[in-house]
Image 1: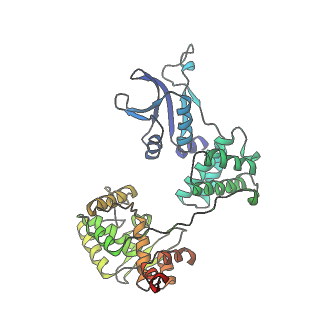
Image 2: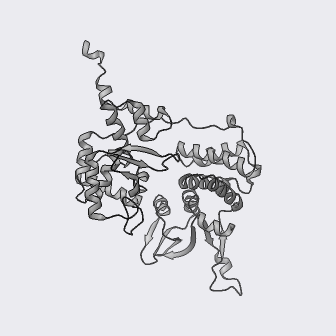
Image 3: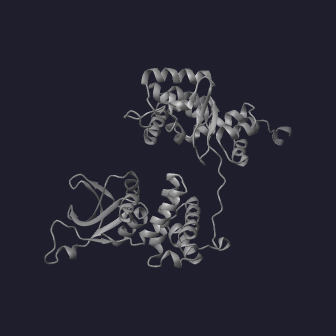
Length: 380
């Protein structure tokens, strides 16, 4: 099971020396992967070669360090060993490989299996296992069983801070390592010795009602219009929308059931006659079978990437240059409810927030609340 798990955990990326346009380069070969391609574009000198049908980078030690830093958490990096290719009797059909990022995969396997058995979300499993892999590569050859607080502090300084990685990622790494040590090695860290970054206090981004209306009116495609409208009308997360099934809409009761959302919680949200009428028109035209919004194949959910593309097209049509994301519609829904006088406790239930503190953040961006405050300047 372990080898099979290693293949599905991370894709493989191969580094091969070559000559291209009279220069020494490293060819970077991997199965198509959007995350790896995005990371490659941040590496100085990384280019796509149509003639070689592969990415390539300048053949320098500094560039290789960039590759390991940027792509190490995303793939198992393998490097061709030219010296071994020339060994007598070598099989021409077998490419000799040197593993360039060694660590104990068995530890990662056990941690991954524990997270899966506890039914952590796929995103959390991916984030935590990748954080553990990045740390194990950093401390190699020290095994996880010998890791202490000093190693984590050194990782924070020499890897996270040195590469200007985010404070939220730093917190995720600490959480992942504490959990991995407790579950895999039965070892507790001393939390008071681990320095955590101070969490930034950011306010949600909100669109005005006029901006929301222009955005929702822009798609000529009824399906696209219905998806964006439902995100705003019910304050849904994008993942909740694409996982919504036809059976989750209860038109007779004018409610919609959001099943196993964030935190594995169900909740009910009201739907108006206006949005129901739009959904009925959409249903008659598209006839989905399982999911409310299906992809190109019947019975499969609409993809998150395609949904983001729908928003991008709508923003282009409205000439809105703000860096709007799908989650802005959820923030706008909550803020507009608050401005219309809806009790904060009800908004908390509608959004599925565990704590009222999370919902209270919308009081800081409510234009109605801010406009009611009179500046002492006006009394001068």
